[in-house]
Image (cartoon, one colour):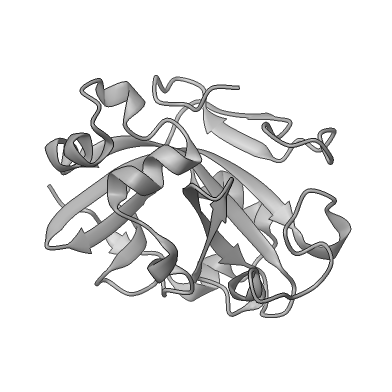
Length: 194
């Protein structure tokens, strides 16, 4: 089964709120000896200085530097000192926009993901931002990697078009909760929990 073609840099050179809904249905692929991949079924947009929930709201720091870098790269950060989260960097360099990858439907390397996650239920493998990074073996060493390259980590288009994309407020945050910047495949059984 083909993982498709990596999305070009031009795809990411738009505001995160434009990129986010277009990521639903694409494949996040990690080539690391064994291919692991999943169809993106849930995302959230975070939009720079004007967004009270964005890591970039106060400008560049050592932690969020990748978020201000060129579009089409990965911004990976640690939450609660325990879990990694992955974001696709969007907009021109210096803006600080990114799309948080919240949930995937596993498509490739499911057994390998299950070993990493120590979970048997396929629906629980990637049903949250920290779960999907663990399942795909994404960590801090991937911060800043180029998503447009066919080797390593990439987001690919295999031609699948989702039929039931819905929108809501972002979840798991305490500010900016009025913004409808979460998109998800409403027909998916692999979404994160509130």
